[in-house]
Each structure stands twice: as structure tokens, then as C-alpha cells.
Length: 119
Image (cartoon, rainbow, N blue to C red; front, side):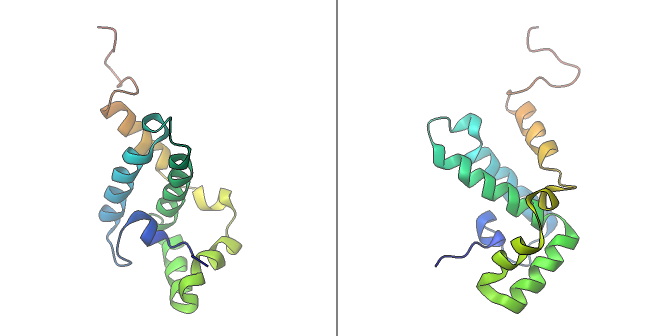
């Protein structure tokens, strides 16, 4: 049975820096965001996995716990981690919303502060 791995989901090495994790997230979020994939229902599920992986790996405490579980349980670390954290816990304190808003403004999906689309 295939086991999820947060590093594999984002396409980063386990020792990736915070900036590498954030850049991988931005690249994948742009690729799989629902606004760009309305005709692809699989993209929504992929985006959920990407968001979760980023929420864990971008949080130093959660990342340390996940890495400890990877060391202890190997490929079943993901399921061990999910037993310890609810979905609400995983996303608490994450900057995902801020990053998606930033991307939406850059690519014209949202109005930038101080500017008007209707000018």
C-alpha cells in the first residue's frame, strides 16, 4: 500500500530549507489551484495534499515531530502523524491563506491593495 510522505508531496528533500519548502509550495499551488483547474477534479484533491504537506513542513515544531516519526516509523510516519493531529491542528498557525492571497494578487485573481482593476 502506498504511504503518503509530506516531502514527496512537495517534491523536496527531507533536509530542505524553509525557503525551498515555501517555493515548492508556491509552484505546486499555482499549478494545482482550483481557479486554474476547474475541469480537473483530481487537482482539488492534489491541492488538499499540497496544503497539508506545506502546513506541516513549514511549521518547525510539526516538522520536527514528523521527522522524528519518519525516523522511527519509516514509510508509515504519515499515518502516525495523522493519528496525533486533527486537520484543524495541522492547519493552525499556517500561512497558506496569506500565500494564496499573495499569488492571487500577483496573477490578477484579486485586486491589489491601493490599486483598482477598474482604472
